[in-house]
Length: 223
Ligand SMILES: N[C@@H](CCC(=O)N[C@@H](CS)C(=O)NCC(=O)O)C(=O)O
Image 1 (spheres, protein in one colour):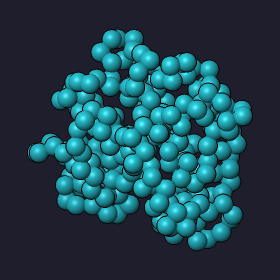
Image 2 (cartoon, helix red, strand yellow):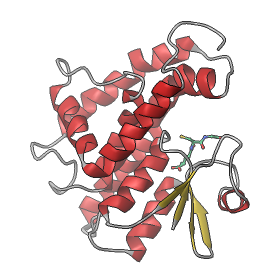
Image 3 (cartoon, helix red, strand yellow):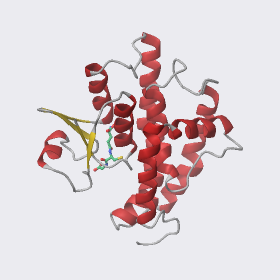
Image 4 (cartoon, rainbow, N blue to C red):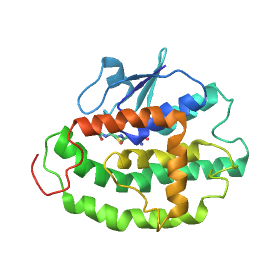
């Protein structure tokens, strides 16, 4: 099975970690931002990453991909069958994919992707606004809901933890993180999830890629 994309994308990393935690072997093929094979183009009609291929089956969208993997390889389950736990898992996946990613994209996009990768003008005010105004309510919320077990749903690892932690792995590559003095539970939770072997090997490579490309751009400039 092939995942197309770059693990700097939280959505792509979510799929790779989900597969790893299930004990699956997923091959990563670089794609996105103009790169990609005909299969990638066929799988992702709007060129977004991740896309996915399993034999003759092509699909894109991280949530569609993990739903497919969960249905095809039900155990160990990472999307709980129990109705309430399943609904809460999907809530956290959506929260990550929408609200956390809105903040994350504004920050990572303007401080790294636009200036370093695409060599385009970036909007520092948008990044600063996201860090100052969009992230704190999310951290306030996580601080309230993270259970003592360190897992968001059923006191064990589920898609909820993978989806929520993944954007913070990307932000960590440019030095943006939950302040441990203000958000101790959230900071410890994110660190623990990202320390799992399924995340750690990927995140180490992501950090190296970002550093090799010059790290974040935080002063207004045209790269
Ligand atoms: N809902 C999609 C979002 C995918 C997405 O927006 N990926 C970004 C990278 S983080 C992308 O491909 N951006 C390039 C573009 O929009 O052209 C998912 O969960 O996979």
